[in-house]
Length: 120
Length: 107
Image (cartoon, rainbow over all chains, first blue to last red; front, side):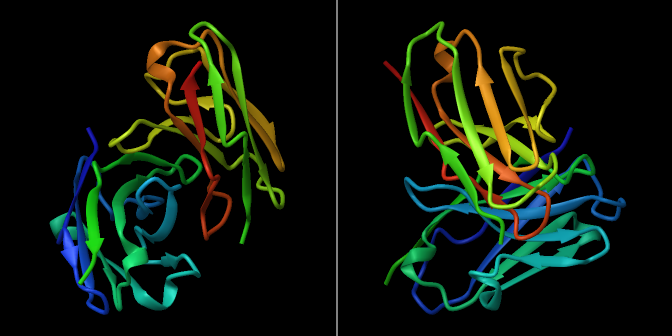
């Protein structure tokens, strides 16, 4: 059974760095084809894909935030970390991590999400 | 980037109705199109993967089709628990992109 859970601060000040951790179980991020992605959702708005890390450490980012994002994995701890620098109030929203399966690269299991507010 | 245009943005329907939601890609994405259902305060739930494949545990009243640039999600015999927001997501290439969502409301 695959599960994922996001953790991190609920409140961050503008210009600070946001660090979110996705802790997962039920799969290994060393298995070929597997990945973990991050998706966010501002309040009342649509989903936005942010980043993805593959089993082979290949990293992909959304161009709109690429310069501020870093995604890393710790296979031994079953964790993926997303770091976003220089946050702004527009970065406020719920952040989800999700398992990317081998089948079509689809995000088939999601964490419950963590709400992050950027405010001074 | 591939743009996903989803329509309608909102939809009112009654229990028992059949509804269709469409997603159009700005370029061909083969069949790398997935559909999600999201209820308020909850994470999205995968309904359909690779354009037409029903995810395990999803009721058979959900179906989908399409390839290339045009895709549809159909819900037959709407049930009360189907009223939610639906999103399409292309996973043909990064950056992955979502449609803007369709809010399905009770008439």
